[in-house]
Image (cartoon, rainbow, N blue to C red; front, side, top):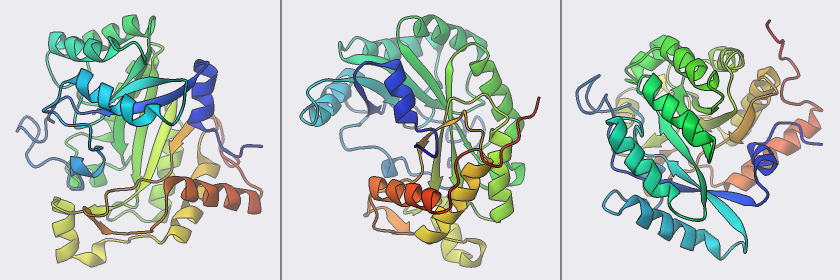
Length: 307
């Protein structure tokens, strides 16, 4: 018995073969980097911390896909791939340019669809209508960075939008029948345990397909790293055991129809300041599953549907 809804199992219902994401860096920027919303980007962000070595903007989208597929192909004889436009804001350009980039990825015979990471304030009706037409032929998921549901936190981390923008974007996307993902960072500065758990209550009201969660990590060459050096008392960096207990309570309050795509993130050791847990993703997932079993609890146990 699975005690939470695993996104991998949801994908298995969609595809007859195993599916692997390939991260793509298409050379986008962000409106809070280029001056439209602000400068410097989100305080926690160093894109190198989550972009694999083969995803470089100096290479074409197709070249990055080829290298990514070569990297994964030896592990499984038969599998399909999703082109994951991950770095920065992947809807932040003119529509004709965006279509050209997405469709370059979809030309690859093994690419079954796209996952497009973006901000809730960088989506529009015209682009969503394009995604709807594309979804009739290919798998399409739009993934929004939520990070926090608290407006004061969003301002502190320099997101450049409020939570109302998140709600609007998610509803506009899901109401069109598109798969809609999101991610949250648990443990941001000035957020206590109850505030973090309230994120579960708030996102449970959204029509999300999948949710990525990860612990706060301090990354070199970010504004947040400087803030930590100057005021470490504003930060609470969790131990693995503490984070697992938090996740259990978070899952109990989370809508059981929202699939979990990730619990934890691993930044490259050369970029990571703290916390360094020394655990692989699969090891961490095993610990969470074991703790859920020990407590005989599950995703949605304390969730109350709201009509």
